[in-house]
Image (cartoon, rainbow, N blue to C red; front, side, top):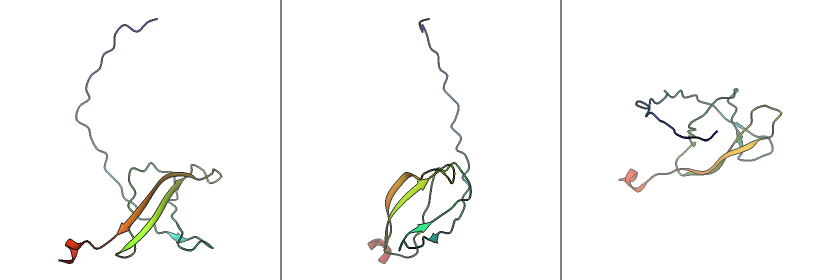
Length: 92
């Protein structure tokens, strides 16, 4: 059978889902200075992650890992340089 035609209909206005924020406190990883672990306690679909650094002029290399089950291997999903700095405009 050969495709002879196709049709499409534009969807209505896109509706953004409401975001639900959850605050998770990290805990230091034993024997790994400067490394922290955050556990959501559930398998959740995430759209955004906001990481609040402890003080101004902080620079962090962050890597986010995920796994479906506790027995699965960790899988890197994101890595970034995070910073919290005072801008020149903020000093004036």
